[in-house]
Image (tube, rainbow, N blue to C red; front, side, top):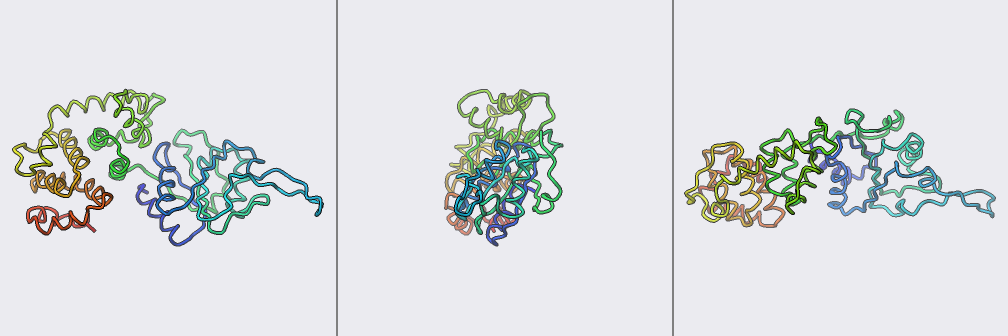
Length: 334
C-alpha cells in the first residue's frame, strides 16, 4: 500500500474506533513511524513510542510488590504505559525484540493487559517492523501473535513522497531530483552503509540547506547523481519571472526532461498565492498537459494547507484560460 493509503486506513480505524492491533511492515526508512505520528497528531491522539528491543521483561510487566493484606504479590506497572485513553501505544521495531519480549507484548496485544496493568478501553495498540528480506536483524513473529493482528505493508511511492516533501519543507532541488530519478528514492542495493530512503532524503535536505555534503545521509552514489543533476539549475528559466508574468513570460518551456523536472518543481514549491499558482500553470500550458498535471498535484495540496484554495477555485471561474486548462483535471480539485 502507498503511504497515503495506509494513512487513510489508520484514520478510518480511529474514526470507527476499531481497537484491533495493527502491524505495519516495510523497508527501513520508508516512513512507517512518521505515518503513525502524523495520524496521531491529526486525530489529536497522544503517542507513546515503546521500543521493546530496549527493554527487559520486568520493564513492561512491572516489579512485584508485596500486598501484605491479601498476602499476594502485585505488579507495579511502569510509568510509561498510558493510564488514559485517546492514545496510540506504538510498539516500533516490534520484531527486533527477542522472543521473550514479544511474549510479554503478546499479552498487551491479545489480552490488552500485562501484569496488573490494563490497557484503557479507548487506546490503540499499533506496531511496526522490518522484514527479513530488508536485511534487517529481526526475529520471526510468532504465528499466534501474527494471526491476531491486522497487517499492512507500506511501499515507497514517488507521488506520495513529493506531496509529503512539499508539506515538510524538503528542499525543492531534492524533490525535483527524485522526480527525475525515482529509482533512488529508496535503494538498498549499494555497498555503502548510508543509502537513500525517504527518511535519509529528508536528512539530506537539512544538510543541503546548510551547504553540507549529502553523501553521509544517502551514500556516495546517490549523492553523486544528485550533484550532477544540480547543474541543470544553470539552464532552467527564471521561476520568479514566470510566477509574476505567467504566459506573458518570453521564456520557453524547456525540452530536456531534467530541466522540466527542475522548473516545474520550483514553480510548484515557490508559488505563494493563487495568482502565482495560476501563472505557473498557464505558462506550462495546454501543450504540456502531463507536466501541468504533475505541477498541479504539488500545488493544489499546498494551496489547501495555506487556506487559499477557495481563492484559487474562484480564480478558475474568472480566468477563462486557466479554467479551461484545469477542466481536464477536475479530480485534483475534488
